[in-house]
Length: 327
Ligand code: 13P
Ligand code: SF4
Image (cartoon, rainbow, N blue to C red; front, top):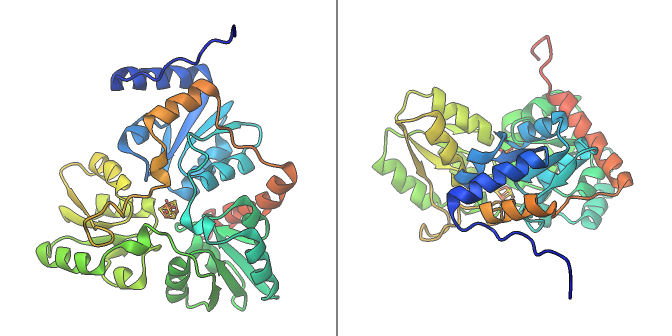
């Protein structure tokens, strides 16, 4: 007969589940970081909610024994790379990203080798292995600033998001060689549905994430990262907005801009929940509880890989930091 005790059962009652998560979080001296695309109930439990760059900075400065990362795996990897002393937990290790999947390290290495003399600028939505092969990492909120700080004659290789890359080319006027990856969520926003919504709500500005295709961005009043979209809806005097990004962010919008209305632009034919990221939403209150209870799944990384991926991430942090001259 085994003497091992069975793990405590996941509470069924929501209030009890939340109370247990908070108790275990305190017991583990853990900080909970969450992305805006998480379910609202997870965002409400987080110590910090932010975009990819803000979350990377928060993970780096976290003075906690344990970081519980409610986002996707590449984000938890970034936390581990920047804060190796902390135990990094993620409720579901299978929380991937279509951009990461589109860019296997071997194929990326060959692509890079075929373009000698280029600066390898890579979106943070990629594996630690691809980061390790890159020169500088960018996020949607830092890419323009970072590009403006590269030498004017730098030839740029940009991976893995071709829509973000094309948007950056249009914004900065820099020619770039683009990897053909896409975000399955942002790529599916329906142009037809957006046109119809604009006709129905002519007074509602459109806010879109730059992972969207050009046809959607062309109709947007504001294009930016999740945190920039969040600022836009707070500062703009309009009372109603059309939102072309993952609708998890609407939870924060309703909290930070109460009384305003946020209409999510549908994905696909408009009849599915294709605008919801299936990777981000693998995290639930239930597996967050189990992760805190078990101390697993845990993000582990070979030190050699961590150090190689750290360099381009540190360049991102340096090149995106505000400068006294304001440039
Ligand atoms: P940001 O929060 O940095 O805008 O990124 C959006 C995204 O798609 C994360 O996977
Ligand atoms: Fe990846 Fe798109 Fe999901 Fe972000 S929203 S994690 S880019 S699949």
